[in-house]
Image (cartoon, rainbow, N blue to C red; front, top):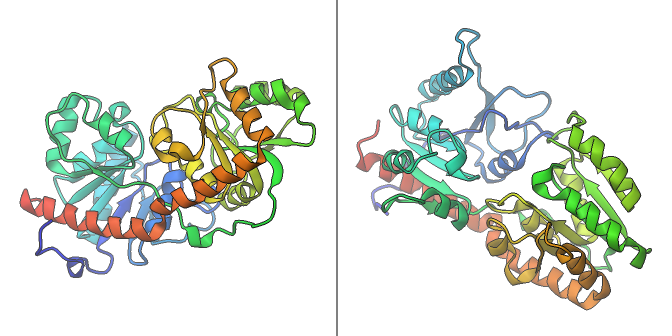
Length: 371
């Protein structure tokens, strides 16, 4: 770390953060990236994204991007809107979330830190090893897990990549000390990648053994109360009803967290390789026993503090559910261990890491002679 770069170099409004175009910063409509940005943002930070309806999330100062009506390519208009805001604010550092192409473009004009929340090999501007190698010479590249780091480094020679794990504010949680409800919960986007249909299948197979228990799904295809009724949802509803699983639809993040604090078991049966596994961390922090799929970064987040079950291997998810449903001591033990394990992702430690990486990004850019 460069010793001459300190937090005193960071002026008021010194950090400008760009959300991905599809990520809303509106309360009640925000996805995982927006919630994390809000959670970590300092009061003087400026958070920029597409215009929103209603109230912005707390954390930082939200400013909407204004895309020109002229021009055929929306991505080009988006880049130009971001550059216009950079030139207006003149921040000490720009943070770009999940857009390698935007980070590369803006690095010509300002100091940039890139934060990756998903597999970079699927993103514009980072699909090839050559692109990723070049980008790592231009900006300080960070990601939310070692899994994301490994994906970024595939096929590359030595590149610098910093890990900035997701976080949770443990002080805001109110985990009850009483006996938890006999409730099994799935919370998240109701899409095939998240394995919600596997959860319905597994519960339908074992529900007759546990008549005193309930199973519920909270979520929709997208974030927000206006999420569309997709073909997947339409097909899942009658199957879920027959299996005895209640589908409660979209609920805001605070309501999801309350449900997790009551549920005895939370299931995260993803087929998609989760780059981090925020739902699993939130369930652990709320004291629920977790069943997660051994994909992506879920194994490193949950570790020995939950059960692992692949959603599509015959009997695995059903067996894990039965094991927890039959053993209250195991449920309590995993819930307590999960809460303790979640401490390593607490907001206080994450803010220190954020400050460190911001200093490093400025030093990195100065060393290469960035504007």
